[in-house]
Amino acid sequence: MLKGKYTTRRRFYRVRLQRALLRTVLRRLHKWAPLREPRPGYTILIPCHHRLPEVLLPNLDLVAKQGLENLDRTVISFDTIESDRLREIAGRLEALYPQLCLEFRYQTPRQAAIIWKIGWAWVDIWLSYCKCLSAARTRYAMLHDMDAMLLRPGIVEERFAAMSRRGVEFLGTHWYIGNGNEAEDEMCFPVEMFVDVAFLRGRFKPVDMFNHVCMWNGRTVDFDVMLFPQTRGRRSLMPMPGEDMVHPGQVISQYVFLLSKAGYIPPERNNLFFIPYFLHLAGNQHVLLEHTQALEGALRTGIPFLGRRLNLVNLSALQVDWVEKQFSRVEQAIAGQMRPDVARYLRAIRRHAGGGSAGAAV
Image 1: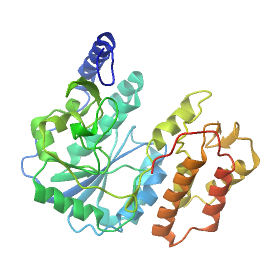
Image 2: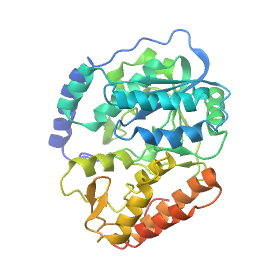
Image 3: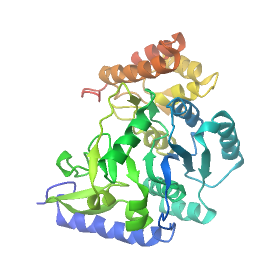
């Protein structure tokens, strides 16, 4: 019996072989060159899911309020080929936020075709990270999620200063726990992590950023995207309290499951509610009211939601409490108070609570 994610040798070596075969395909998808003469400052890197590019609007609106004195540019990488819709969104963002020096990356038709055949979302995420890292001209860069909302101005500059001062290759907000990894491994969670781009591009190939199945500290682990290179570098933490950032997590993965898996029932920690709210913040005049009315008028097992039917049988009151706290933090940062239409949306969500039993994340 093995310790960690994989408890049998047969399972461990089978998955390890599968990943090795997959990496033989991925190593041909993208290449980069070492960063020889890095510019001063830092780059913000944002992988973006192509189905929800509008979420970038409230995200970048908060980023633009950060006070980014040392920003070189912001690179956004979409997980699909270039299209008229994405070009239109990119043009709007460039016009709205010239101070962010936005630059956009897309998949090539060849990359998109191969990834579609593979059919695993983590490959898209890996490639988006790699395309962002390839475009960085500065030694340091921050990996920023499209659904992570920075609430307090000054966060990015503070982390850049800490990264420069500490002389590490990775600076995270908290240690990664899961997939066999424990806090004692001291691997930085990738979201909002600062990285040394020169270190990554000088010591590793893009495929090394991908998931790795291996033994680590006596346990079988599945290193997530951006974790394996940390085994060769120095890591440090600079915690980010909840008052500074709202990052619900698993929003995109739950959304993809809702669209693609027939009969999908979200887990108790259902974060799909953030999507209509973020689209509302992006300027959609109808989405919040439409989903509020749907939640007010339907049974919990068949709610019209984002073009599908949503089953809330697992939703708990604790999770709704947590969602409301995150909404309140964003509302305070953007509007100074909870606005009536958002409060009504939350009340409509709460009427379906009661299915789950475990506690929600704080």
